[in-house]
Image (cartoon, rainbow, N blue to C red; front, side):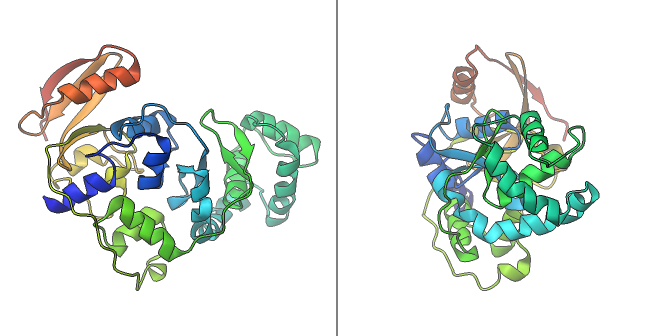
Length: 309
């Protein structure tokens, strides 16, 4: 279908990116709470090694994403919402507004070099900000500080100070970048992807999507791949009878195979073995399995099991 071909092109799945900048300039962000899943998403788009001025921070839906540093203008339309949505939990953890306000300059003081969470907690205690290291308070304080443009999370799960941020963006700017990365799509899709309330995504301008035609592209996508996560309505790509096999709750997706944008199988890897459950005819996975093996640095053996769903 033309729409799915356009989405595959926008997502750099049918014409792979040349490097990290090329990839993130196109797709804006990769979901990044699971670094291994994030790297698989990059692999499917042609990038085996992520490098350059990139940062992980809490953004759309309050979830960790990987961005180019220059694209942190996205915090403009999102940061207030992230802070507001986290307030109840922060209060439950004793992270009062007053404590959080004191913590921001304290974090700027102690983060002279990237630190682990435990190291951040210890350094904060030295300057009068006491947190229970066994609670969720440190994690929620880090997310609060990130939303306020103070720090980010590295690919090694350390925390580091953010340099000067670009000028804050707007909802319309975010909508246009979303459409470039996911279009064709609707304002309802945009609201679900961004986490913004529907009241803020009304009257958005029309956006013209780049034309594309199906070309037989086959891709093996992982747990948190943005291809499906970018839409509220996934029925065009994911048949309703197969949705329970893929969408298992909490934004978690069973790794899946797409052909011309349509989900046709699930897959899982155990060591060097990749087991694929096809919903119908078996797709040609030779190139994808070979590329996955190069990415993993090991020989990969493919086995087929017909799915029952």
